[in-house]
Image 1 (cartoon, rainbow, N blue to C red):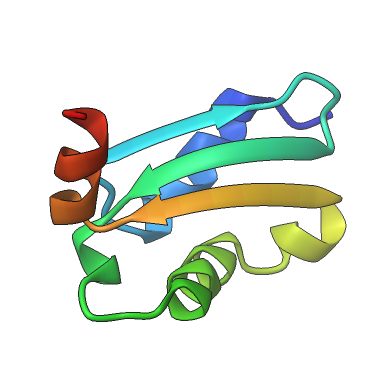
Image 2: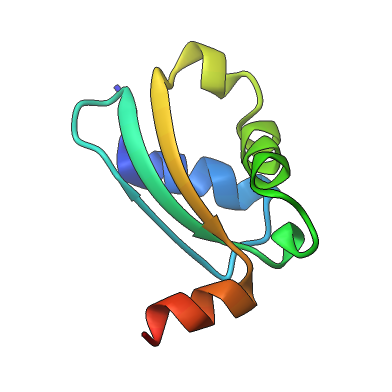
Length: 82
C-alpha cells in the first residue's frame, strides 16, 4: 500500500518542487498541492501532465486517483498570502 509520503517522494524525484503536500490515507486515493517553477507558462492540463510524467507507470499501477492543485511559485505566493 502506498503512503502519502512515498507519493510525495515519487513526484519530487522527477519534478522540481518548491512545495508539495500530499494527503491520503487509504493507499490509492490522494490529494496533492504542488508548487513548481516547471509550471511557469503552462496551462493547468499541462501542469498536471508534468506531474503524471513524473509518476510514470506508478499512476496506472499504484495510484487509483490523484486530485491535484498545481501552482507556479508566483501564483502560490498570491494564494498562500491571502
